[in-house]
Amino acid sequence: MGDYKEPLIYADEILKFIEKGNGSIPFVGGYSIMEDDRFTPSLIRLKADGFLFEETKSGYKNLTLTKEGREVLQMGGYNELLKRDEERKNNVKVKQELELEKLRYDVKNSKRIYKTYWWTFAFSITALVISLILLYLKLSE
Image (cartoon, rainbow, N blue to C red; front, side):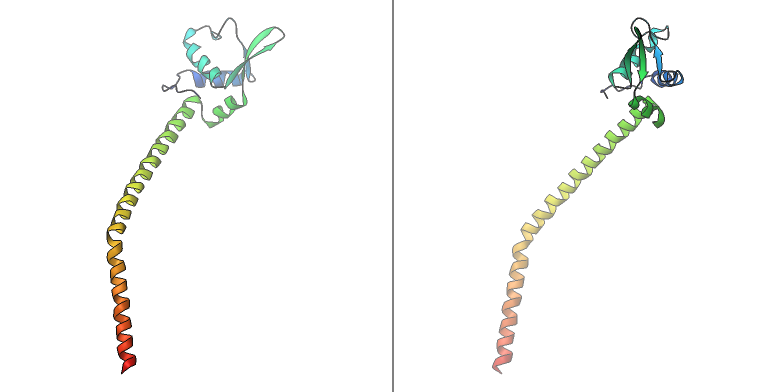
């Protein structure tokens, strides 16, 4: 699908109209099949996105609904598809923001570990030395 941001006003109507015509309708001279040029942007976008294709039968050209076009109709229409794509993009952005926040916490945590590592190491060595001294004293009695 292209990067077209605005929902196409007539895309859903065109898809439903073609579906009612057994999935195919003839067109005459370009894309003005419904005798009105206001459908042109929607028809061009639907054809570019692969929801419609031109088919020639017996010398006549038809606009035919593709499998993807039928799936879009079952999902709720072209504009619904655009909304879902926008939601999916927003979800990806949120996921990326969360991953960046996690990375910030990971960096802070690793800095803290680096600063405190030698302290904990020194305390454990000190505890080992004290334990060995106490063991020696206990055994030497």
